[in-house]
Length: 110
Length: 287
Image (tube, rainbow over all chains, first blue to last red; front, side, top):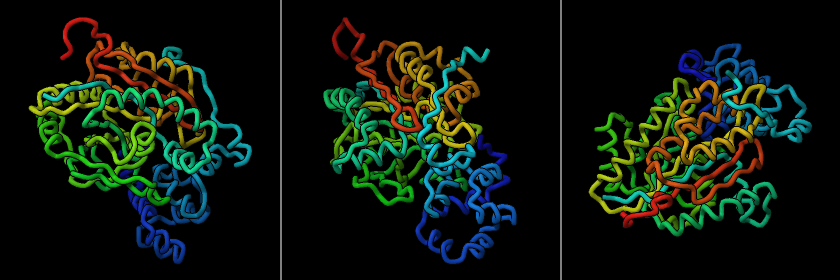
């Protein structure tokens, strides 16, 4: 769950990821990713997560998933790829398995 | 005063829009064709009601608002709302017009009721609106829109009861605006879905069907479900369903269903319900 406290800690990462909405930002990332990440003030850990395309790690580090999927899209990975990564699943098997239906009601939780 | 004709609760999801465009180009995915066909009766109901204005309670998905300034409630006062580019280019639809002369009296009344909204002279609309809109209306859009964006992304979010109160304030605002518009209120949010973390792709049909049934005349039961429990049983992003409460509360308690539909084409469960102010009003002259 993305909270204000997480946002305060990881604002630079989210600002960097949101900017993938703009074509010029995507272009600069394709050409010189390190310089761009330095400019946005990403930490060494965050930069490494981006380099490794570690979507799970980036969200765990405080990236909002709606922002992180913009980076994924720029490198050719869909939201579903990000989902498979988060579930530690093989992409082809994962997409066949969706949706994962649960059957529980609020009153069952006590 | 303007006349409230009814309301619509409806899901939104990026693929709903994308698959509409694909379908219109001649290749419907069967799962989305089902949604298209299932929403026809709602479309027909809306056409019969012939509103002049839609007031839409929705959320942006980091496609217009960024985290630098994140409003809890924002209201679009512009004369035109372009489509937001979500990173895949614009879809083949024009933006949609607003109507400041209609919107300002409503905004003023909402503030007087305690809703201190952020006024947006510019606002681009993302799939929160444009994914379901073409299923219900065709361009050139025959209505003017008043969009109200709610923070559904960064906790703390407004509470379910606060959204109910927004709907109540909206009803009073519309009915006392000194104008003569015909208004339908829309509350839009995905039904069960979670699209991050290890529960990515979860849905809960039993919960959703119960929600669709209870939103008609037993919203008090839904309001008793805490946000934590709602997110636990229906997925974290299903908290968007609380925006349906604003739509329901804007209508008379006696408003009744004029049709509903439910299907799960992909990873977000899609449901829709139309609630008619005149249904259930069996006696007395029409207002």
